[in-house]
Image (cartoon, rainbow, N blue to C red; front, top):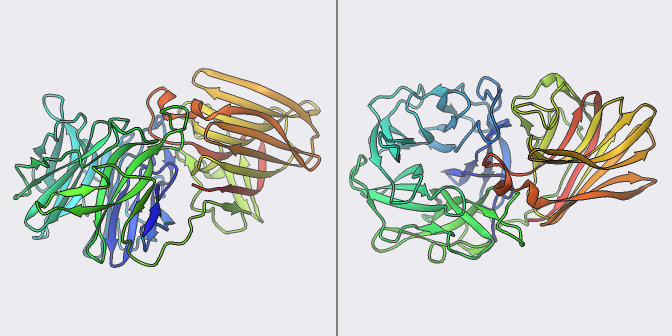
Length: 501
């Protein structure tokens, strides 16, 4: 059966997957965005439903002052003896921790903090019931290495000292350890080469859990580092065996724009079948390369067509799970009632360093999309409220309405690195509602406002200026569609997205 990649488009990096019966669950990184670590469910590995987040409370996810692309790094999701466990790193707080739940659609525990340092933690249960904690940390010589200790996953208490079990397979930045057991072999899978264009996945194995681990003679088992495809940076993978005994690999990768090796949608989640050779080493894709279309005997029901279309009229009791905030939101800045989402500007704007702007945002999941926001409430003096293509506080394009004295304007603002400028400004009637629109292609964002029942183009901006390769410092996230309010308040009555991956 043929299927299309990515299976989770847009900003969905560092995927980790587990299976319970014929149900698959997958989580990804979230960095400075709140809530943290989205949980997706699927029966067939292609159609994924967002069912919740692991980290939904400020006590679980303190992000105050978290710098851009800090906060929550790579998570690992595992299931053992009726309990789901998720371990990850908050690099802006106390480091590694574990949360757990018996109901993956319900609430998760408070963090059990783990004293073993490093990043990219993972959990593994051996046949004797012992649980092991793995992480990536610097060794005494400054080299990335993989450390492992026995742990109580409910409390985070280490039951043994952390011992180095691997230095990787020769690539730089050996990280993202995931440990599996198949037959008599322990397999240690790693990401190496950095999460950019030299990214790759390697694997080692040993007869004993503590090693010594020997590398696969065909490493890397996955990499696009020398491949001319627009699909690049493959790595940071996790494995799952389906109910039919077939193995699958999920990994992150990027889709570059046609004109250059640049990407702005973020690192996305891809899927590949994985096969075991006669020598008991795994093989992935075509000589370690995956594709936008692949063939595999998928589990579960046949996949439905995947749609990225979304419309929100804000008529529910809670905000849709797809909406995110930058850092911990000020709850007083958001009111959901009577088919309207009211945003109240509370001081921070979109460009405030380490701020928490009043904005609800969702991932841009395709190159070619149309985003429409219907807003109510005439702007007040000095207010800016509108629609944004937002990467982070230093990189965003915004179309917004504002008021100066008796005159209202619709403006297009570009914030790129240290340049912050209004590039277009047009007077409009100070009426009580306005519709704003962004159309995107692989190369351009185009911004529109409604006037006399028709949309008028205000200006456009290059997608390349919101790309991860151009940001300073280096960043790991992707572009969001956002509705924001800087000072005053604005009502959002409708938001829609149209597009396809």
